[in-house]
Length: 470
Image 1: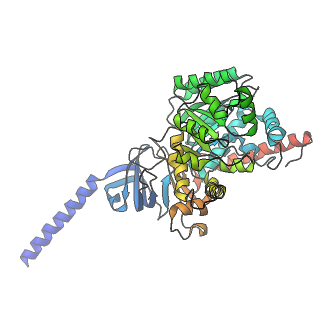
Image 2: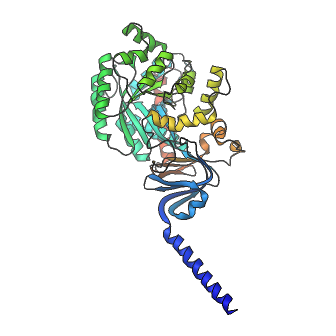
């Protein structure tokens, strides 16, 4: 009996001090995500069906099976109860402030000249751009987008809205040869862009950029000047490229028959900083040029087919090793900018277009929306996958809704079954920006109220011009 008591005492002593040593060894982190089905989207597509992820400051410091959770204690614990955890989606092309014109002229033949340009001439201002960016940021955040690339006017106002909500963005100041609200000439546009770039060059979440509207809406000299400055400042160049027959015809006349992509090569403006949006009219030679110069491509499927412009040869681009990411285009083109609405269309249309249902599998779509898009924006070293040392841009997609039950293949569930409203939590740069569908850094009701009030002004303007609200 005496021996048993001694043994029990020793065992209690060991258990107590062993447990205490575990507690003392625990590392304190800011956010701990537990009980998640983690899709890392790393090069090996590593999954942790019951995993955890630890965030400290703005980075991922550990990821792995749930059994390692005991090594950490956290200020904030998100027990996601088996939901899907993956990198935030990256929208590689949009015009976010145009949310305020959404649903106008959708089925009108000459929408650009009949609705968009006149509305922009009357309404584009600093205040309009900021409000439109707030509305668009809110939509993207709630739809799982944590980073986006934008082209518009008064882009410093978009930057303010991005800074407020806490998202990540590549923001391109538009340069175009026609007079606009913020610049009367392309030269003024370049000067505006340079000032913007100098102000935001070292921002932790905002990457400033040049955004020449397109090859056909800028002169050769302007395009060459922007390419030169982009290398000087080491910033991206965002542009529409190989998008339309009009562009093709104008460039062919300017360059003795060259395609837009071959023309840009001939004038020496292609490099890794360039992101071409759309790239619908690209042949085999064009794709080889894109690969040669490491040009990134933003694929905007729903906007392209809605405008009846065609289907980009994405399957061939990927086969040739071109970096391709997903975009939505502006909210007057694709209408929704959350990116998730693109997934199903990207997969299905490529299958139909190429007459092969095995092409563009669901996992390929998610790769394009994450690491593919990150590589397009030259940020693959820091975002696009869940890996130790990378920035903590993370989303959680719920699995308990009717449309998400059951799940046999998580990639297929996200691409073909999920809605943007299935996104539960969004984290950007290590900060929780949305929890259980509630935006934490912006007043959602107030933004929607002000956007609605703006729409009343647009309706009144259309009525006074005698234009139908279509």
